[in-house]
Length: 273
Image (tube, rainbow, N blue to C red; front, side, top):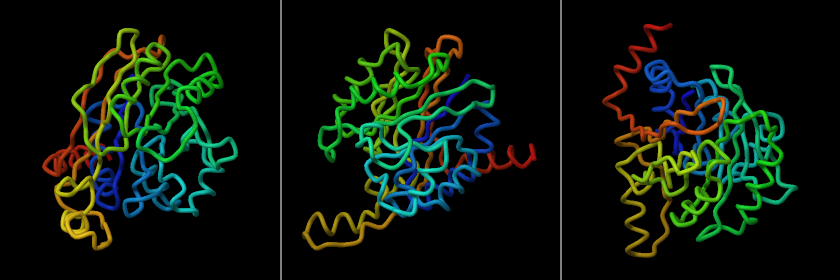
């Protein structure tokens, strides 16, 4: 089976390119399951119920979150009721939302999904390695395909998680920095790994925000509103092929969809409909 994990969707530009490209992308690459980190989907910070539904309608099957999980309190109702969105599993036990979930891929395979926050250079969170152990212990043993979104700043910490879970999950894929890394690989025991799959949104920016606003505040210390940028939108993500019988990865591939790719993908989706 083939999984697509889409990196941090940033604001309306990120949502728009996903909406336009994803139906054709699913068809062209024969993708069985799409998971996306959407913690930046609402104006660059947080997610709302309306945006959650937009992303699901666009073809995303499950959503992971990160350190901005509760930036928009209106998302609480979705976190309480929907079974295809997860909050970081190493937040306090009382935190709103699911620590892990399972969804069914288009080929019928059940897939477990969970996310964790890193500790280095991040807001305080529980030990992610122990939280990973708890989440995996709770997942039914017959669900062999398992995906972790590790929302992490330090590449060393991401690499450590990959090694810690090697052979126990299908993929450990990083988010948070918005910068795709070129270290995708299959680890020795069969887990697909990448430090950060990158950002989905405007690349003519500073990690999704307007360059002029970030530059002014950085050089002068005068506060500005770090608005989401608009130009050079791309989808960054990672494709992972998994053996559904063993749950181990057989291939990993970086993916980048640009605005130049949209006409072909939209035409393909229109032809199918």
